[in-house]
Length: 456
Length: 182
Image 1 (cartoon, chains in turn brown, cyan):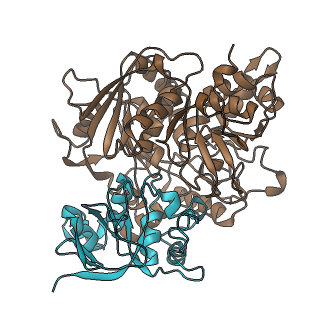
Image 2: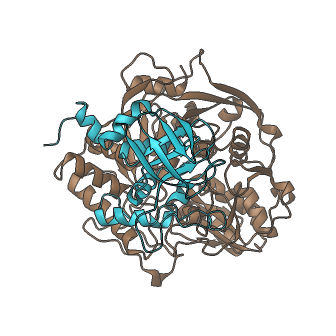
Image 3: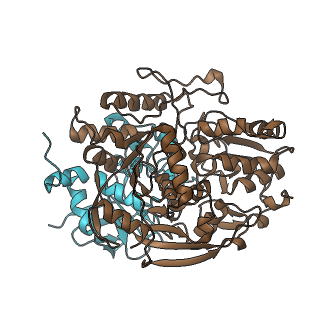
């Protein structure tokens, strides 16, 4: 069996499953956030009763992250709905914006967007925060009310996005009926050339198989190229399985995975036992292709979908109005370090916004020093408008006062994961997806630029 | 008598993602709050680019659409997992979407909520139908008839009773998968 089949077989109490089987799986973690949490809670109460209790308090993780730093009153209210539910149910894993368990969240627009407005428990973007807080354990089954939940597959678990109704069902029962997907294998060989990042690998692959090339399927990543990647790179790739329509993305767990996971579990005191699954010698794939990543070049997904692939070096005629780095897939510490490597000592030519995925990323950028300067200062000195308010921000547009949102038609290059019309705000805008390196080089040049022009 | 629905069609192309069905700025509305559910209907398909889709799906002062059937190409409902997408369409009065193919989560959310019937067409219908055409959907024979021609649709199979029951929870109770409401 493939990794996904082994995980689903075990979680459904069967010795074996095959693609197409419908199985009831036991859920290890349910994730929700401020956009879909209130609706999920509404479904749960409507269906199981106003006084119903969730199936297992320790298996629910609630991370407000989408519309936080906005004066929009419904957005602020939605965070309060989460807090009320957490208090009522006694849920231990709620990463609130504020510290007062009985308080109300209200964003203070008069203090501006750049300075921190969250308390000590806030965790930032849910998919990046989950592993950082020790909630991604190899071998488990994780559902989340967000399509990028597939990012957790980087840690050797089954993770996929669901709607409010399914999530409400899980809240009450701890189970979900799902179809076992076929598995596509992507076998990575070689080492990436300087200037090429994990983001280029996934954009290349989506361009290859198409924006619906993995619909209803698992994307399994193997080979020396996958083993050589650190956890941040694996997350970048697993995150975007959904951009090819995939049900989940998955990497085999190895020592790198265990080291990361164990450290985070110890730091946050989450459940420490887990049981990984190994690769079988006999696996059956619906698609099996080998990619030599040493041949890849900086890659861009052009407007209007993540499968519309081109090479950065061929797009120099596209002038830009804005550059953006942030989100679950592109707002990790390593993403900002790569960005800083390019812009260090130079000045961006266009409006450039940086949104760290989590408060930890803010701290790491401020504490990492290159010569005399922190990386945070290197970025701001280059003209990047950095906010300490870690969140999803303009990756998905959001309320009109969202930091970095495209409120007028423009061309934007972005280290995020999705570029359908209107995704970042204005539906007349064109969004180009690229790696942090390529976004940085393009910010310096004001047009789409191959980052190798700036790397020694 | 066969179960049918007759109404006007609204035609879209490939790859209509959930941001075009319900833009992210409206996700502050909580679908289980009745007045916010109604409001979601008024924003259904408001994210479609105006140059490609000059006709309003829902009139600016309304929460309901005159188009009961949406005709689409490949990969309808791709992108975010927001259940607000089928809900906004259902709240606006859409009975069915007929697409060449669906993104997984949209299809599942349509069934789980029971908001609309996500039919797959055998042939590509956006090339032969235009917005405003009158059409009749026959649920028992899995056909769409418009402009004097009948088009075969793929049977909904095991998901049809779930939608007919009104979604996952009702179906699960009817079939004894979960206990009846107290």
